[in-house]
Length: 123
Image (cartoon, rainbow, N blue to C red):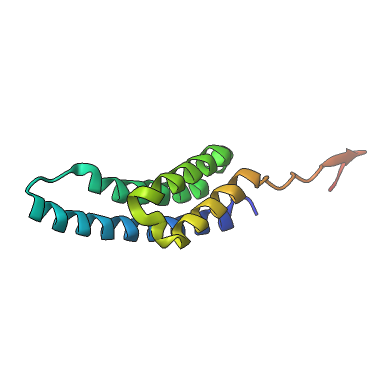
């Protein structure tokens, strides 16, 4: 397996749940701000965190040599999602942290050794 597929899928699913949690917080914040009379852009943070978590999952697939960076950022965004997106209903938080951890621990498979003996290639 040349790419951290499991880590990427878990992170994208967790990010989607975080995005849904951020959308719920955004709608509730819009309703509250309609009654209070002022709008705060703080309600948008959950949406941004969810989108960035999905982006980290996609980047795990597209740029596997930087898997540690994407894994750490996925975990950071999952932690930030707790107050701003309800942690993606907790399940999104758990999936994003699991995906980030798997991405950090992932190692590319070793390349096969090619040995040449008297002009013949032996794998």
